[in-house]
Amino acid sequence: MRPPLLVLAVGNPSRGDDALGPELLQQLEACGLPAQGDVELLSDFQLQVEHALDLADRHAVLFADAAHPGAVDGVALYPLLAALQAPRHSHALSAPEVLQVAQSLGLALPAAWQLALEGQCFALGAGLSPAAREHLAQALPQVQAWVQARRAEMAPATARPESLRATPPPAPGAGGCARTVPVRAEDG
Image (cartoon, rainbow, N blue to C red; front, side):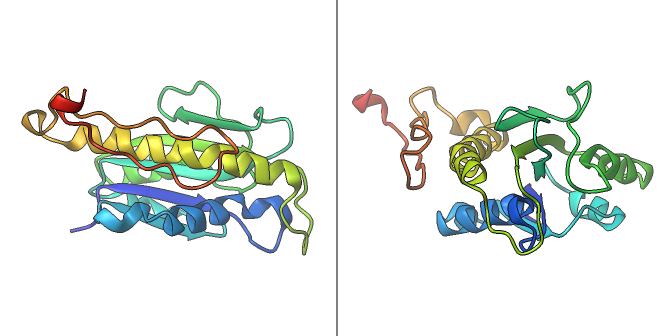
Protein backbone atom coordinates (compact mmCIF):
# COMPACT_ATOMS: atom_id res chain seq x y z
CA MET A 1 0.00 0.00 0.00
CA ARG A 2 1.37 3.41 -0.92
CA PRO A 3 1.72 6.23 1.62
CA PRO A 4 -1.43 8.39 1.77
CA LEU A 5 0.53 11.67 1.62
CA LEU A 6 2.69 12.73 -1.30
CA VAL A 7 5.04 15.68 -1.60
CA LEU A 8 5.85 15.97 -5.30
CA ALA A 9 8.62 18.46 -5.98
CA VAL A 10 9.89 19.49 -9.37
CA GLY A 11 13.01 21.30 -10.42
CA ASN A 12 16.41 21.01 -12.02
CA PRO A 13 19.25 21.03 -9.47
CA SER A 14 21.60 22.35 -12.15
CA ARG A 15 19.60 25.52 -12.83
CA GLY A 16 20.01 27.82 -9.84
CA ASP A 17 16.80 28.49 -7.95
CA ASP A 18 14.96 25.87 -10.01
CA ALA A 19 16.50 23.48 -7.48
CA LEU A 20 14.18 24.74 -4.71
CA GLY A 21 11.79 21.75 -5.01
CA PRO A 22 14.49 19.05 -4.85
CA GLU A 23 16.32 20.95 -2.09
CA LEU A 24 13.12 21.06 -0.05
CA LEU A 25 12.77 17.28 -0.33
CA GLN A 26 16.36 16.76 0.80
CA GLN A 27 15.69 18.84 3.91
CA LEU A 28 12.42 17.02 4.62
CA GLU A 29 14.25 13.70 4.29
CA ALA A 30 16.98 14.92 6.65
CA CYS A 31 14.30 15.87 9.19
CA GLY A 32 12.89 12.35 9.07
CA LEU A 33 9.51 13.41 7.70
CA PRO A 34 8.81 10.13 5.87
CA ALA A 35 9.93 8.00 8.84
CA GLN A 36 6.35 7.12 9.87
CA GLY A 37 5.71 5.60 6.46
CA ASP A 38 2.74 7.80 5.65
CA VAL A 39 4.58 10.36 3.49
CA GLU A 40 6.27 9.76 0.15
CA LEU A 41 8.74 12.32 -1.19
CA LEU A 42 9.00 12.30 -4.97
CA SER A 43 11.15 14.55 -7.15
CA ASP A 44 11.44 15.03 -10.89
CA PHE A 45 12.75 17.65 -13.30
CA GLN A 46 9.24 18.62 -14.40
CA LEU A 47 5.65 17.51 -14.07
CA GLN A 48 4.57 15.02 -16.70
CA VAL A 49 1.33 13.21 -17.50
CA GLU A 50 2.75 10.09 -15.85
CA HIS A 51 2.64 11.88 -12.50
CA ALA A 52 -1.14 11.57 -12.60
CA LEU A 53 -0.65 7.90 -11.69
CA ASP A 54 1.34 8.94 -8.60
CA LEU A 55 -1.86 10.54 -7.27
CA ALA A 56 -3.79 7.25 -7.13
CA ASP A 57 -4.84 6.10 -3.67
CA ARG A 58 -3.61 9.25 -1.90
CA HIS A 59 -5.31 11.31 0.77
CA ALA A 60 -3.45 14.49 -0.14
CA VAL A 61 -0.69 15.76 -2.40
CA LEU A 62 1.52 18.82 -2.11
CA PHE A 63 3.12 20.03 -5.33
CA ALA A 64 6.30 22.05 -4.69
CA ASP A 65 8.02 24.13 -7.35
CA ALA A 66 10.04 27.25 -7.84
CA ALA A 67 8.04 30.22 -9.08
CA HIS A 68 9.30 32.95 -11.37
CA PRO A 69 10.32 36.27 -9.77
CA GLY A 70 7.28 38.30 -8.74
CA ALA A 71 4.78 35.43 -9.18
CA VAL A 72 4.49 35.06 -5.39
CA ASP A 73 5.83 37.03 -2.47
CA GLY A 74 8.50 34.65 -1.18
CA VAL A 75 6.55 31.50 -0.30
CA ALA A 76 2.91 30.68 -0.97
CA LEU A 77 1.08 27.54 0.17
CA TYR A 78 -2.50 27.24 -0.98
CA PRO A 79 -5.12 24.63 -1.84
CA LEU A 80 -5.20 24.01 -5.59
CA LEU A 81 -8.91 23.44 -5.98
CA ALA A 82 -9.66 26.73 -4.19
CA ALA A 83 -7.09 28.72 -6.16
CA LEU A 84 -8.64 30.97 -8.77
CA GLN A 85 -5.39 31.40 -10.65
CA ALA A 86 -2.15 29.56 -10.02
CA PRO A 87 1.12 31.50 -10.30
CA ARG A 88 3.29 30.76 -13.29
CA HIS A 89 5.81 28.09 -12.36
CA SER A 90 9.04 27.13 -14.01
CA HIS A 91 7.72 23.99 -15.74
CA ALA A 92 5.48 23.38 -18.72
CA LEU A 93 2.86 21.07 -17.16
CA SER A 94 1.15 22.61 -14.16
CA ALA A 95 -0.13 20.84 -11.06
CA PRO A 96 -3.80 21.53 -12.01
CA GLU A 97 -3.09 19.91 -15.39
CA VAL A 98 -1.72 16.80 -13.65
CA LEU A 99 -4.92 16.71 -11.59
CA GLN A 100 -6.99 17.00 -14.78
CA VAL A 101 -5.12 14.05 -16.30
CA ALA A 102 -5.74 12.00 -13.15
CA GLN A 103 -9.42 12.87 -13.27
CA SER A 104 -9.63 11.94 -16.96
CA LEU A 105 -8.17 8.54 -16.03
CA GLY A 106 -11.01 8.05 -13.56
CA LEU A 107 -8.82 8.34 -10.46
CA ALA A 108 -10.27 9.72 -7.25
CA LEU A 109 -8.49 13.03 -6.78
CA PRO A 110 -6.63 13.61 -3.53
CA ALA A 111 -6.88 16.95 -1.79
CA ALA A 112 -4.21 19.03 -3.49
CA TRP A 113 -2.08 21.97 -2.50
CA GLN A 114 0.61 24.00 -4.22
CA LEU A 115 3.76 25.30 -2.58
CA ALA A 116 5.35 28.04 -4.66
CA LEU A 117 8.82 29.23 -3.69
CA GLU A 118 9.92 32.41 -5.40
CA GLY A 119 13.20 32.08 -7.25
CA GLN A 120 15.43 34.80 -8.62
CA CYS A 121 18.07 33.16 -10.81
CA PHE A 122 17.52 30.10 -13.00
CA ALA A 123 20.86 30.11 -14.82
CA LEU A 124 22.53 26.85 -15.74
CA GLY A 125 25.27 26.01 -13.25
CA ALA A 126 24.20 28.62 -10.69
CA GLY A 127 23.60 27.70 -7.06
CA LEU A 128 20.66 28.79 -4.94
CA SER A 129 20.41 32.56 -4.56
CA PRO A 130 20.38 34.07 -1.04
CA ALA A 131 16.68 34.92 -1.49
CA ALA A 132 15.91 31.33 -2.50
CA ARG A 133 17.71 30.00 0.57
CA GLU A 134 15.57 32.28 2.73
CA HIS A 135 12.39 31.11 1.00
CA LEU A 136 13.45 27.49 1.51
CA ALA A 137 13.94 28.13 5.24
CA GLN A 138 10.46 29.69 5.40
CA ALA A 139 8.88 26.79 3.51
CA LEU A 140 10.26 23.93 5.61
CA PRO A 141 8.09 24.52 8.71
CA GLN A 142 5.07 25.25 6.50
CA VAL A 143 5.39 21.86 4.82
CA GLN A 144 5.87 20.14 8.17
CA ALA A 145 2.71 21.83 9.46
CA TRP A 146 0.88 20.79 6.28
CA VAL A 147 1.87 17.14 6.89
CA GLN A 148 0.77 17.32 10.54
CA ALA A 149 -2.60 18.77 9.52
CA ARG A 150 -3.13 16.00 6.95
CA ARG A 151 -2.13 13.36 9.50
CA ALA A 152 -4.74 14.79 11.87
CA GLU A 153 -7.37 14.61 9.12
CA MET A 154 -6.61 10.93 8.56
CA ALA A 155 -6.62 9.95 12.23
CA PRO A 156 -9.84 8.36 13.45
CA ALA A 157 -11.88 10.75 15.57
CA THR A 158 -11.44 8.52 18.62
CA ALA A 159 -7.64 8.68 18.24
CA ARG A 160 -7.56 12.49 18.28
CA PRO A 161 -8.53 13.66 21.75
CA GLU A 162 -8.53 17.41 22.22
CA SER A 163 -5.58 17.00 24.56
CA LEU A 164 -3.32 16.12 21.63
CA ARG A 165 -1.98 19.11 19.76
CA ALA A 166 1.12 19.86 17.77
CA THR A 167 3.78 22.29 18.85
CA PRO A 168 4.06 25.26 16.50
CA PRO A 169 6.84 25.14 13.92
CA PRO A 170 9.95 27.23 14.63
CA ALA A 171 10.04 30.79 13.44
CA PRO A 172 11.47 31.25 9.95
CA GLY A 173 15.22 31.29 10.10
CA ALA A 174 15.29 29.55 13.49
CA GLY A 175 16.95 26.55 11.85
CA GLY A 176 16.50 22.89 12.55
CA CYS A 177 13.50 20.73 11.95
CA ALA A 178 10.13 21.40 13.47
CA ARG A 179 9.03 18.49 15.62
CA THR A 180 5.55 17.79 16.90
CA VAL A 181 5.10 16.54 20.40
CA PRO A 182 1.81 15.20 21.73
CA VAL A 183 0.69 16.91 24.91
CA ARG A 184 -1.10 14.78 27.48
CA ALA A 185 -4.21 16.14 29.17
CA GLU A 186 -2.45 16.24 32.53
CA ASP A 187 0.31 18.44 30.98
CA GLY A 188 -2.07 20.82 29.53
